[in-house]
Length: 162
Image: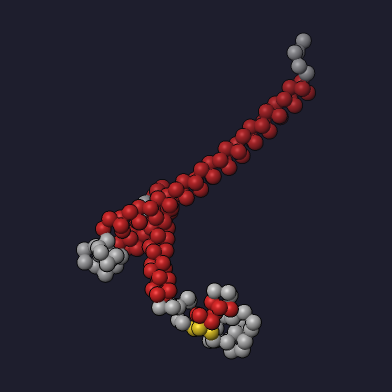
């Protein structure tokens, strides 16, 4: 005499199989998220490394030249790492190289954009050219949108309460 019926045995077996499938789905999702987190850490780490290296090696004028070349070493390193990753030159770590390169390049882009913004601010310009909306003659109530007249940065700032 059997302890459980054959129907109960098959239901339990089916439930165990279904549970196993769910565990595999959760495991696959967790592995995917772990790779995303790893990519984020590599990107942030690349940016942090570039910031530290620039702070350590740049001169008093804020410039950093490697071997006297007129190319910023951090930009060159970032683009090289992206290229190595994109073309999968480094095999299984190519994606890691891509993430680190993205971080280095993002640092460089942010740093240079900050410098441009500071320069424009010291010149009294918000958007860089000193005038906005030139391509669309006409006037609107709130400045540089479709149909706006050319406004100076000061006029634009005043129209937004600045």
